Image (cartoon, helix red, strand yellow):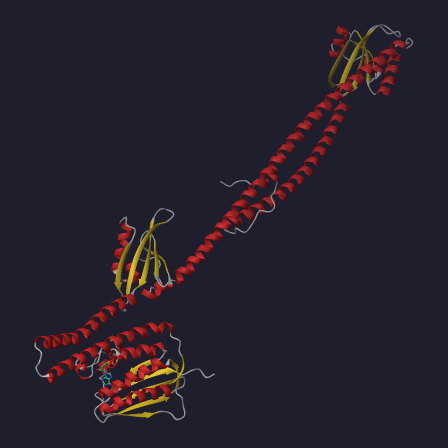
Length: 595
Ligand code: ADP
């Protein structure tokens, strides 16, 4: 239903009331004035009749009826009223009729005013005069015999049409006045209501804008006092909503920042189990399709385990479900599902994906480490135990036989010691990596120290060192001298151990753009391609029998890799090849920035 505008209603009502008021005023005033005029005219008619009666009584005797007729005509002319004298119904004199025609006038004894006068002494009647063709007021009064005239009825007729004319002109004047008032009032009402309509529209416009979410708007002017409480309520409501919206926006911003900054992938699902939103970590973890929103988890993740988890949470009254899935790229993800109820009470879900690959790897690393360490320690320990028991149970007579056993026990004990020291060194280097403060170190000096330390060992093994270093260069690198010395020791010791007698170990250094690369090359058996990466893993040994030959624990290169990584460098083996035999281990460290 289309509502008529407030302005139009106001206008129509205003006009209707005005027209009614003016119509009532017009009717009342015209009726009142009309009856006043009639009363005045009647009064004047009676006064004139009295005057004429007095004049007639005072008049000298008329010679004839014609003399009286002349008198009546003269007086009538002065008074402006018709004067008639009637005796027994016969008109004796009449101011409006020529005298010679008077005799032919009809009997006036039956005229109502005459009849009334004859009965009561005076009478009055208002009617249309056929003689004069006008509305007239007739007043009549009996007259005794006077001025030589017999007793009769004196009648005066005052034209009523004059009253009517005055009344009509009065009505027309009134009408014009009322129309003028109506026009001015209507114009004024239209102007006022348009003004009011305009301010109501402005008021409504502000209210509409507030309703559409522009909560900073306020209703400052109102169309009238009645609107003030409404304006205050709307303003208070807008202020409150603005505050709530700001709070919600702030919280939303915080949540969004948290949501996007999280390492965990988060996916929100609606009550139908379809994706509503997800964060960047989620996308990075599962690589969500662009059209993920609105689809089911199985469609976007292709993992039935996640779909099962979602289906369970949506169908059963459970508060928390967790599962672990292995992704195609080798990562392990822990998925937790948490239901919550939205404002309609519908059950929705939040899935949190936590990448636990590192934890899993650490767990596996620890397991492997414990297994390897146990294995490394158990073998020599078994040997020590066996030889010790033999010595105790069956002590050889000859000490030289016992010495051989004791030497084996010592060798195994040394190996155990080496394994334990290496494990401690690895743990230390792994721990130090976090707090290590690296600084420029002279690679040339550290290398020289390593050479000085290892030359005696090399001599024992019948091998020699050869160095090829750039002239006049300190070979400064970013690192820490003890760690660097450890790396040189390890690589050079291995080279010594695996070199054939008379072999030459070449240590080279190459200054690169922002780094320095060191290599230790020997002429030993070398390391095949399949082992060249694995030798850096903990406890990895190329030859399982190394313990008997060189007592290898397989931790030395792992420690070297950790130390070099701590320095921000890299280490690798590139000694394999068609024409090559020996091993060649290299590592590269960053050079200090030129100041
Ligand atoms: P360890 O600390 O017990 O010496 P490493 O980690 O240093 O063990 O070495 C791991 C394995 O790599 C050794 O068991 C050995 O088989 C092999 N290897 C290391 N250096 C050389 C080399 N220069 N020539 C041949 N094999 C080597």
